[in-house]
Structures are given as structure tokens and as C-alpha cells.
Image 1 (cartoon, rainbow over the protein chains, first blue to last red):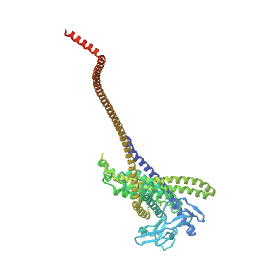
Image 2: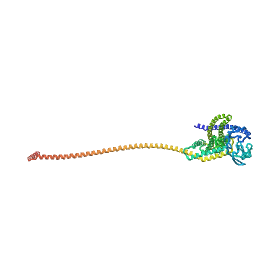
Image 3: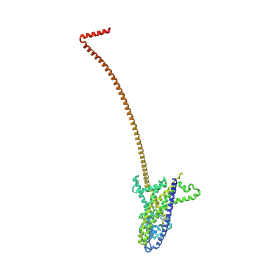
Image 4: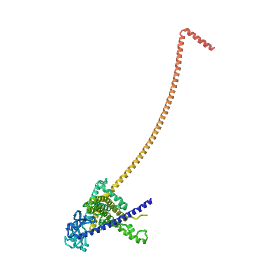
Length: 400
Length: 165
């Protein structure tokens, strides 16, 4: 019995570590791919920017969201890299269909200029300057050019850009706010159902949510944190459902869903940072003792071990951040790539495009199913590891 | 572009996530988890109560059986006692009746003896009287005329003479 228990305690972290390694490795692969795409994409953009200045501004601009660029003859050319990056990344404005985008509010604070707010429509998809700002490769930068100047000719005021804090409601911010509203609606109504029905059996949405809450409580919080789990339940539940809802929302390709919120590094960074801060705040003497000077280890070994442990403190949230980001982004990219195939082949031959579309559709459906699974798994993994880190931070010394 | 830490997004994310966390903590997670643990407690209570009730019923059954057994035993004892008492009483009654009968019989025997004695005595008396009466009648008959009387006197005289001599 003892042997089995021991093997279990040893095997579990081993399996975890292996899966962690794999996910990091795969994340690395998908990174490399994106980088390649990205460079190719921006290169072509530059080529077009050189070619088109004299053409009709409205029709001639490379549209990041549709990935449509026009060559000198005005024939639309599909650029899958740009299309995918446009959908996966963040934008000041939400591309809906064709050339139609939903303008979003630009909120900027500049330590020298103060606060300014205006619609992103003024930027005209990044082609014009407004209020002393313009978009440079999707990024808000300061400029001294007058309003309405062609952004491709305006020069960036780099000193002022450094003093600029872009607080705009971008596509991802808006999508995240939608998810937040959705979350509040779901869980406040579920809470109301609980208040109304008391301890009687759950019903409707309540009965859908309850097993998940119980799962997070019993298999994530209790299993990893132990008897003091209750303190962390609100955080773990919120993180779990936040990631899950954003993952699922990202799979629905219709406005106001389809943004890549949980696959945005800023979002995963914030979530991981909160876990990190909670670990630091709650870490007890036992936890810090093990990190700074592992008991029972000879002094010379500590010289190596302590830096590694300290590195580990930062690496753990970093891995949390990267895993979620990479998994969700990769899923989006794969689905979009299958879609791109239709248009790539369609450009060669319309019939070929239709033919490929069947396979693309099948693959996209298959991938979406996979993503549905991934949505749950990643929400679970993030919450589970957060709980594990919190559990190790508050763990009391064992009395052997 | 893909790995771009955007200040705005981090800012909004932090603000909205913390807001959601606190709103849900206060208005959703607390009541939901409260109800869940309360429900679990009630279920556990109900289960333990059911178990207790079952045990109680079992105990009661055992007690009932015990009582039944005791009652049965008691009944046996009572019946036995009753039987004993009955037997004893019947025996006593029999003995008493026998004694009484005995007494009656002896008294009757005494009475009969007495009666018999009295009757015998009376019969003796009556026989004596009758014999006197018969003797008187016979004498009267025999001595009705003087001659007869004379002869008798003579005879008696003779006899008396004879005896004297």
C-alpha cells in the first residue's frame, strides 16, 4: 500500500511536468510559425504601401482584417497571414464583414498632452492621423501631423509616443467586457436561483453550472489546497469561468464573439500575474523557507538550488501565461488556416476553391470540436495549476 | 504583433477582472457555495438521520422481540402457576370433600347405630309388653270360669307344695 501511494505521489508531478514540457515545446513551435507568418505578412504590406499611394484610398488599402490587399491593377489578392493575424490579434476597431468595421473608442492618456478620447473611425483603418495620434502597424503612436494627414506620410514623434498610454477600448477589450457582462448575467442569475430555490435540487442553467462549480471545488481547490481551500474559491471559480467563457466565445465567429481574448498574451499575463501576486501574498514561512533555503540540503548545493527555486517562482506564472496564450491562439490560427485554404485555392480556380471548401469545412468542424475540448481543458489546467501553486504557498510543514 | 503586451488591454483586464471577481465573490460565489455546502450538510444529516432511524427501528425490533419473549416466558410462568394453584386447590377441595364425606359418613354411622340401639330397645320393650299382653289375654281366657281358677290354684298350690317339700 505504501509503495503504491509513494508511486502515486511521485508519478503525478512527473506526469504534470511532462505535459508542461510538451505544452511549452508545442507553444514554441506555434510561436515560430507565427513569427514566420508575421514577417511575411508585414513584408507584403510594405510592398503594397509603396505601390498604392496614388490609388483610391478606400479601396486600395490593405485591410488587416480581411487580409485583402489590392495590387496595382486593383485586383484583390488574398493574404492569409494578414487575415489570420488580423483576426487573432488586437485592433482599434472591430472588423465585421467585407470593408465594414465597427469603430471603437480611442482613449489615450499622454503625460504631456493629457487625456483624449475619440472614435477609431477618425483613423480610417490606420490611414489618417487624428488628435495628434495615428496607428502604426496597429499600434497607437503620437505624431505632430495635423488631423486627417495621410498616416503613411506622417512622422512619429517618438518622445511623445513614450509618454502615451493607450487605454483604448480595442477589439479584445470590448470582447472581454462582453464576456464580463455575460459572466455577471449568468452567475448572478444562477445565484438568484440558488437564493430562491435554497437547498432543493438545481434546475435549468443552475444544474448546468453546478457540476462545474463542484468540480472546481472538489477536484481543483480541495485536492490541491487542502482544508483552507475556501479562501481561494472565489478566485479559482472566477478564473475558471473567465477563461472558459472567453475560450468558448472565441470559437463563435460572429460579432461580438470571435475575438481572441484568452489567446491574448496581455490577458493571460494579467491572469497569471494575479495568481503570482496571490501566491506571494499568501506564501507562509514554510513556503519561503523552502525556496530560499531548502531544509536538509547542504550549504554549497543551496548556492545552486536557491537561484533555481527563485527562478521557479517567476517561471511558474510565466508558464501559466504562455500555455493558455499559445493553446488558444494556436487553435484560432489552425481554424483560420483551414478557412484560408478555401480562398487560396479559390484564387487559383473557383472550382478548386469550392472543392477544397468541403475538406476545409470538415477540418474546421473537427478542429472546432477539438477547440471545444481545449477550451475546457485549458480553463481547467490554468485553474488547477493556480490552485496547486496557491496550495504549495499555504502548505503547512508536515510533521513526520 | 502576436506577442505584444498592450498596456490598455492589461489595464482593462485587471480592472474588469478584479471587478468581476469582487462582484461575483459577494453576490454569486458566496451564496452559491453557501447553498451547496448547506445542501450537502442537509443531505448528510438526512442520511445520518435515516441511518439512526434504521438503527432505532432495529433496536426497537430487538426490544420488541425481547419483550415478546419476556411476555411469553411470563405467560408460561403464570400459566404454570395457575395450573399449580388449580391443581393444589382441586387437591385441597378433594381432600376437604373427602374429609367432610368421611365425617358425614361416620356421623351417619353413629346415628344409625344409635337409632338401631333405640329401635332394638323399643322393640324389646314392645315385645315385653306384647308378651305381657298375650300372657294376660291367655290367662284371662284360661281362667274365665271358677273351676278352671280352682284347678289352677290347686295346681299352683300343688306345685308350691311340691317345692316346699
